Image (tube, rainbow, N blue to C red; front, side, top):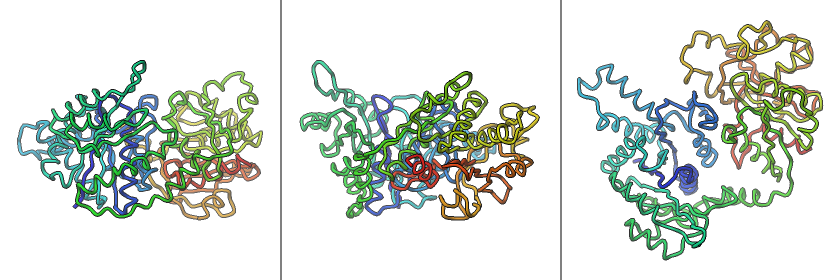
Length: 531
């Protein structure tokens, strides 16, 4: 029978619920249990696919093509498991499903209400995650902060699950802030007490409290929280600020957080195998080299918009004992009269990631042109590949008006065009080419040497594609089309063989990179940037 762990947050947002959930999942997996993860987001958007990156950060895409919250990236990177459509549930999805059932008459004429109809739908999503994953333990993070009106239905559904499944099958982790008051130089537990009071008022008593603070809580403060929150002192877990995020699971392990959960579930506490994770910490704490990589994008004001790309660069750096210093460059600022030699003075590699819309495009093209002409290692992702092809068409093939229909619907030379199956689509949400697709790699290419395989699968998120009408011309001028989706004859990877490193892909390799297993394309890019 699947067991369920629920992670809630109190006092303020941004306490690290996602990292707490991921860390607990990692520890439970290290003891031999199959773990699945899930995020409930209270917003009414069906998914984050149509949300601005400035508002929400990156959209993480799962293998089955679900557009999800960026926390799912943390989950996958920590537990190295592929998640799916049951892993990110929003208020929008819940209400859409309930309204669809009402319209079909599934409720047999009943008055549809928050309780029981909406809460039943939420409970079904929790149970569905356990059934479809066949996991021993499902860990569900609840977005937002206790007391938010948006999350009340989710909290009520969890209360009902505890009532249905019992304490032996459910476990509540509540993360709170214990602030340090400068002047009196003391930690204050009152916000935690009030947060737990709020949670109890909604019918949930936490089984564990994770306290976020700059320093460890002493025995007296833990005793105070235990007394006022009706929780064993040993079930109060310190989550102190750390320089290395990978240290957090080990800190929880040292406080027996996973053992506490397993004992409540009546499950065997097997020996944990954390050797690979401990080796990772050893490496990341002792990086003895550093290089600068320029990330040229249009959303660089919010680094979370490129979270998985930044993490993937760092993962590759770990392999080569090198700290990756990212130079975040706003592509709009490269447009006009700019001295690129000065901009890229210390740059060892240039990466142009994904994005949508025409803002900042010409700046990205200038960066790609600089990389190609100055033989600077280059990696393009999604939009970055499309712009690399446009730059090559303009400056090598002499097609001055080469462009994408995304930026100019009437452009005379659409090197990048709208995919055929996208032309009659009206709804923008959830309708892109999403998730895993096959790619056949040409032998003797950089892509083949990176992957060491002819057949790969990678995750996608795009609506436009390379226009094959221009393929022969670009090939004649030296561009190599090294990866193709044969089912749709879609170009997946392009490269220039006469450069130190120049490769670009239509898919998003950053979604498959792991801290203990960097992605082949990032591996090759960083290796050649170091050289």
